[in-house]
Length: 440
Image (cartoon, rainbow, N blue to C red; front, side, top):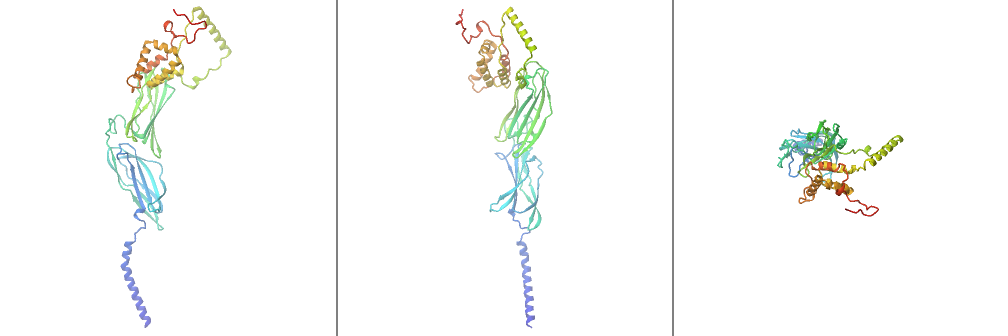
């Protein structure tokens, strides 16, 4: 009897416990999340590095910094990029993974990626969310989670500077962090003569640009030359700080006239995205013809001559001496040496009046006889006076002579000259051995 009573009480207690458990089960399901990851454990952000003022110009590079911080174990991952309809873009290097410390002191995984984007038009755009699809280990169970970034507003400013700009057909819009130009000739253009050909190769590099944004081949035209333009080679070099665009322009240049041909400098305007100002790069001015060889083989001493050559040279010198004795002593000719002439002509080709005047001063100190002949020449004296007045006159800001004057003056100064006689002859630098010469 007692055992039946105990069994009945036990069954009643179990039934009561079952009813309590049935009432508490929905509350437990609501209180327990389906995944044991907190909302702050997975964050994914996209941050644009906009220039000062908050808006870039069209075709200007802007870096997008992608960063994910994940406090969980990641098995697989894949970044889903939105369609960047109004942008050109390129990824800079590989993704990087590391560890970072959270604000609460705990460690977490850190993902980073850098993308360079180039807006193509003026306006206000929105970069849609990036999605980082993660396969994680949640308490021993594999789960796939999509972590989304927030949409990013992206304003592109309208150009308000003087002239040019992204929408102007001329000049070419070139926004870059830095621009450099190298100019190479083979052979030296000053050494080629009429009918000969020299190859000119100009390399233009722009930091923070793609190769497709570089300008077309510059136009190189001047009187007296024939140019044959070669193909343009473009390439983009990816660096951690951004892409570097490189364009190689090539011409074959042939002079068609015997005189000296000046080539003017070619200016390439570009927008400095660091200082936010317009600047200019320059393909330097050069001179075709009229110079002396500047190759190592031309500076080597001549090979020693054989005995037959020496004998013939001695006989020729003896005959020339007899001719001079018989017909009167001839006068020699004075001229600048090779280095001095080259310095003058290069400064003239670059239209650099200060460098020209400095080279001329050195030449006048080294050759006082030639300096006296130059001063006695009315045309040269007039040009020298005009050059000095321009450099050292009332206006100190002027530093270049008018275009075309310096090459003509350099041509006149580098010609050989016969020593003057009579009152224009320079005074002897040493007194004669038998005393001073009496003047009439």
